[in-house]
Amino acid sequence: MLKRLTIENYALIDHLEIEFDKELNIITGETGAGKSVLLSALGTVLGAKPDAAIIKDPQKNCWIEAEFEGTDTEIKTLAEENCIDIDDSLIIRRILMPGGKNRAFVNDQPSSISLLRDIASFLIDIHSQHDTLLLTSGAYRLKAIDSIASNEEIRKKYRLAFERVKELRRNLAELKERVAEERKNADWTLYQFKELDEAKLEEGEKERLEEEQQILENAERISEAVVPLAAIMDEENGVLDNIHSILSGIEHLQNIYPNSKNYVQRLRSLEIELKDISGEAHDEIERIQSNPERLEAIDKRLGLIYNLLKKHSKQTVSELISLKEHYKTMCIELDEGEETIAELEKELSKAVEEETAIEKALHKSREDVLEKFSKDVENRLKFMAMNDAVFQASITSKEASLDGCDEITFLFSANRGMAVQPVQKVASGGELSRIMLSLKSVLSSVMKLPTIIFDEIDTGVSGMTAAAVGDVLLGMSKGIQLINITHLPQVASLGRRHFFVYKQNSSTYIKVLSEQERLEEIAKMLSSAEITQAAREQAKNLLDR
Image (cartoon, rainbow, N blue to C red; front, top):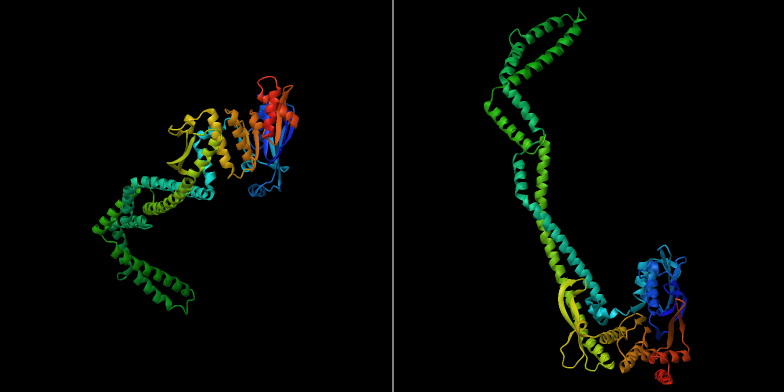
């Protein structure tokens, strides 16, 4: 609960400090005195975006401090996650500087604004004068039903399932788009691969064929040179015969002519080398013969290679082989893409089934509470002098979103026999106030928030209805802390602590009223002009009630 609020140099406020009661707190004052400024300051300390012009004296800092007691588990968990020490007391401070900068603290430790907002979501619910418009918000209506249904765990599961389906659909769409693009060129890619694959290209093949082609094209010229070479080596009295004869003669001189050994060694080496030349020459004569069929085959093969090199703008057979592997990979990836699509479609189908099952459970949790919720709100409306009122919360289907596939509509009729219609279309201002108060009253029993603040929730009602509204607020305050800004004396008389806001010398002040001051304030609220004795008597009756 909110124990204390201190404000310094904010809007119309120089300095004020308020300590609240744990049950029903009433705030009254003339229009324009600055009552709503208190709510604005409280919103700011809890993380709302401040206006730089809100600083009263631009030469000084503005600071707002709110002290809460009785912190729950969620807040302690948040604090621990952000390395902030916390016990049963929580002090939040925000300092606004003239230059536009601001700083936030939780229990004197620096804090981010996002953390303030997270903490505030477990601390307080501020209902401003315009929040009856929330009844027109589908998100608010759904949130109200979910609070009654206590289906947070189901909603968490559904959000995870919804995001999973969304992600799978996105991945599948991207994959299908990529595969479709690849499929457009699939026939071309496959043709290129087959053409290169059927060519059976080999590393170094082009160079070997070109060499063989050159030899075959010049076979006659080569033979004309090599045949005499072989002949001169092997014919009778040829080079080898002559060397052999010379060797025989010189070998006999080795005993009498030492230098002959050198000649013998060299001639032996020369003989061996010439025999090798002779053998190779004979082999070449055998190999290098005019072979038109082989030459034609080589020409045809080289023609294929040259055409492929030109077609694919490559320089070597090695590059063509690499290109073939690239096309092969593309074909494999296309096949794998098709397989992956099939797998993803199965996965998506399963995820959709799971999402649908959770969505049905979520829908049922909401549907199960509609009748009782509607009756509870309707009973509170009857209590507030709307005896013929009919209130119905209905559920219809909508496109799936993070919150499910349900849309909640609040239907209302103020008069017997009139068909119910959406509340925002048929309810007057006073009726909207009572409907909203009824909703808040029902929701307060399930909300974990320790404090609710109403800024003129009773707008548009008077007389006995105002007394009934006060009773509803009083009943709510037995379970939670209520702070209520009001212009109704019937409501003001029920507060355990009564604050009066007033303006003096262009500044806003607030004070806690004594019993006598309170009687005078309520009497003034009852009187149209000067406070009469009758107004005082009526004020006393209200306070005694």
